[in-house]
Length: 322
Image 1: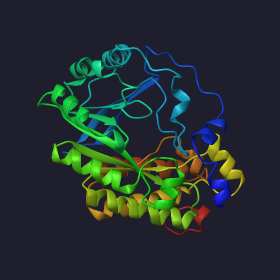
Image 2: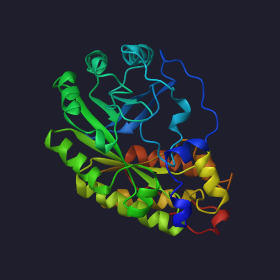
Image 3: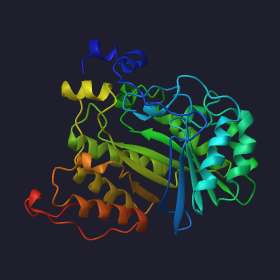
Image 4: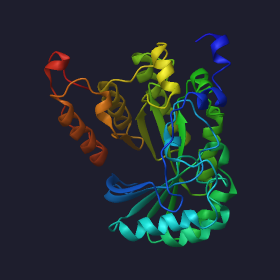
């Protein structure tokens, strides 16, 4: 990418390329589900995920499409706790719960501080509560919310590291450096709060080989910093900006085999849990014959944290998939 083009890759440019966002109700989460996840204890746990409806994230990252299910304005006090209550009352029993708000839980424009106590009361019966946050929003509010949960419930904070490639990280408009991530993880660790990292597989401005290499390097740094687990997320088009970059040749979807290779690498380190994001994974497959088997294998690896037999298919010339 030329420097002349790069200067336009800011929040205004990113927003200008967007399609319309979805209509959502500020008094209801826009989705919720329960899935299995290997917990920090090593046991397979039912995990509820509530996708909260609230104001768009304050950081307009180049690759993000979560803004599609957000609002233009901040929700009033009480709205987030009502959403949590509504979903918790409907979901079956679970050991973990994720409160994902398409941004940062500790952004006061998204989740009002006055809602913290009510939210904590609603989820304090879970073994673990997982929220997401930008590293620059990690501060004493995390400690205060943890204390509200009580001693029987652990807080875990998911942080987007994205990539340790310094130039690409800058171009993502993440408005952070790798040092900010490390600082946030160490701060939380000092206060006995677990962390997980989100790692991007093949962000823009990388070819396939570079995407694999930098995802592995990002996993290395995340574990060195002290995270408990990493989630590898293949980057997708569809948010407007990424589609423009796809047309210009500055981005392409990663291959399913690349996700398999990075997951294999991360788990083989033995440094902590590593998960592959399997949402809408068919987007990254070029073969209908082997896709379901490969998807099932990734889900099984996520849940077992064990490296399972590889899938064979004629689409890769009968070579084993890593």
